[in-house]
Amino acid sequence: MSTLVLVFALVGVGLTAPADSPFSISIEPVFLRLGVDVDVRIGSVHLHASWSAIPDECTVNQSTS
Image 1 (cartoon, helix red, strand yellow):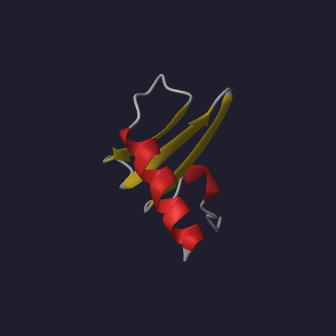
Image 2 (tube, rainbow, N blue to C red; image 1 turned 45 degrees about the horizontal axis):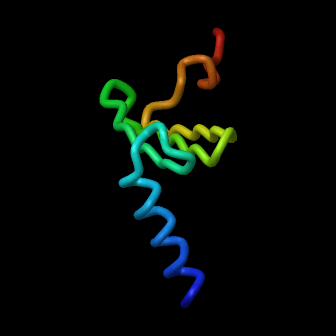
């Protein structure tokens, strides 16, 4: 239970922190791809993740006839 509270506290602080602070989380919607981009910054470490409901064209397997 305490781990869950800690995770919610860190996410709450990270979402409300300014972008130039040592710890920040930003979530940006990407409407053209129907997805989201998530950036997490902890000190000098920058983590980026993205998700899209529409797959990229280069990853779709197309059969050639």
